[in-house]
Amino acid sequence: IHYYEKALAGNLEIYGENHPEVSKQQSHLGWAWANLGEYGMSKIYYRLALDGYLKSRGENHPSVIETRHNLKEISGMLK
Picture 1 (cartoon, rainbow, N blue to C red):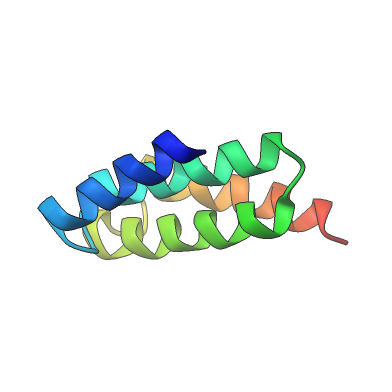
Picture 2: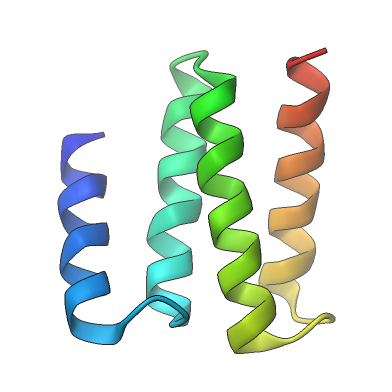
């Protein structure tokens, strides 16, 4: 998690909030938290990734579709 967070901080500094590289790192953090069983944290990062991908890539981009799927799966774990 630590290295993903460092990568995210660096990408935010370089690219700003709505860049696909930032969204990719947020998605990686969502995956990492999910693998630790921390579904609440995972959902937060997947939601951030989805918002960023929607702004930078648009509704029908594969990254948006994949992140929506991941968010749905994690949301099911929280029920």
